[in-house]
Amino acid sequence: MWLINVNKKLLLMKMHYFLYSGCIATILSFGSTYAKQLGYSKITVGYIMMSLFIISMLTKPVVGAIVDKFRVKKYMFILFIFLTGISACFLMFVSRLSLETSIELECNINITNVKIYFDHTKKLSDCDQKILMGNNGERLVNCKLYCNNNDILFSEMFTGTKSTSINEPSINSSNIESLKTKITDLPVLIHLYNFNSKQYGSYNFRVGYVDINHSRIMSPVCYHPTKMPCQLYCPSPTIMELAAIPQSKKMIISMPEFWEFFSLLCIFWISQSGIWAIQDPICFDLLEDKPNDFGKQRCWTSIGWGFVTMFSGWLVDYFSYNKVQKDYTPLSYLILSFMILNLIVASNISVVEFKVSQNTFHNVFKLFTKLHVISFFAWILMLGVYSSMTMSYLFWYLEDLASEYQCNQVAWIKTLQGFSQGLQSFGGEMPIFFCSGWIIKHIGHKHCMSLVLFAFTVRFFFYSIMTNPIWVLLIEILNGMAYALGRAVMVSYSRRISPPSTHHTVLGLVGLFDCIGLSLGGVLASHIYDFYGGVWLFRLFTYGSAVMCVLQIIYNLLTKTKTNEKTIYY
Image (cartoon, rainbow, N blue to C red; front, top):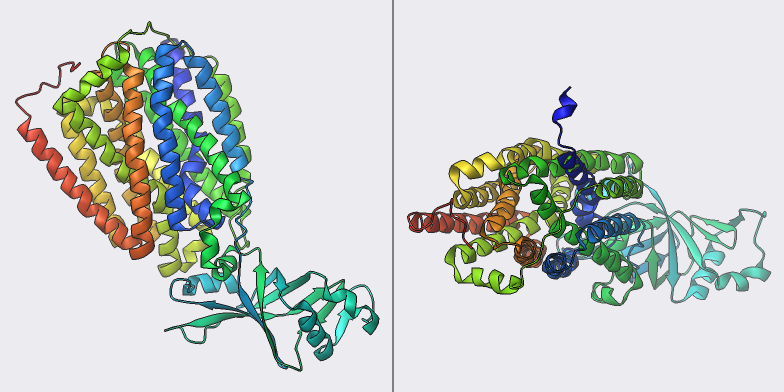
């Protein structure tokens, strides 16, 4: 009998929120650490995120204006869902950056080493060394070497070493000339040690054997000591990062791998931004005279986000067992299934098209003559800055903490990250979204804005003092106040101040200011993180958010008698 009371229109909207968040959660949650694995630095990721947020910033008001002007809301809604899913799926298969590397091959009468020199900025942590060497202190890595003087190298190796053929009993001198020009595969048996860790040193990788034209040279040595520069290509991101030439990182923009990655990210970001600009107004239209129930619908975003991130984190760790790097490809099938289901649901959602006001832009820009509107958009800007920092670098920070303090957690760090998102969603966002209408009604929009800034301050403070990543499971519960209440206030207040028939346009402007904050926050955080480290990043943001919280409280007190929360401000 309870099914009689179910609002089928809102049920479909809840299902969309669940499936939509499930589709984008893997990219938005694990995107920065996935980019790190592909070979991108913190600063590069910061500028990529800035570019994406600028694209999103332009997309949201344009989409809002288009659907206010033309009656194409549902068509654009379905198109953006399709493009979001397809681009996210293909992102899991992009190529890793082919950074130019530089190492030294040292061959003498006792041993042959691949030598990678390092300074303090590239030195491995003890945990990274343990992972690289494996459980028994050594690991076999199949790499390829391209050296400047292959003929001299091969000649010395053939002179100093007995060769055993994989397919034939021996190598005769007649085919040595043909072997000189072959690409050399050097499986490397790793033994890490640094000569001088205080000033400079090197990581030495002992060459176990060399395969040349189906012939294997075991433990190669040279009677005449030989050193030569080479380029190295290994499946290990850690080794490649060590060997990468710094100048090559500045040339990333000229690499086809970068444009493959960035183009797919642009399609993904434009599409998910378009959905964001359309879905919330559709939900408000379906709620009719019950706008305070918006949070009860939006909480299904958190349910989907929490479920998918927990499952995705475990899935990545499961398929990455005993691998040097994490395997994200299983997530593509998860994304694809959510996209197909969402297309079915979205095609059945009732979409209301309104008659458009002829003075849409005039009415909207008149809002910016009012102080409470200006302060609202300034608050949105700061919210974007703080959200960008956690979105882009929290998981990166957790991996750095695990690598430095908790080496045993590195193997299941994706599971931990996924469960942190799950607790963030189920323990923080979902209850707040569900109760957001009641909270806004009883304390008002402006006091909610102060509460959101206070929650960010507390979160950043605890991040800055923790040394064990597992504490993030408790800290992320605060995201309910920081994110969920902030988003509910953002959408609710924008609807309150919107002139008739301009809600999509105003919400587009809300998205624009949000994206300005997100883009600024990403770049600022990347430079602070790169130069001062994660602890100082969160410490500085703690001070900044605390100052903004105090200023918001002062503003609320000064305008308390001038503004009535129940007034429609347009």
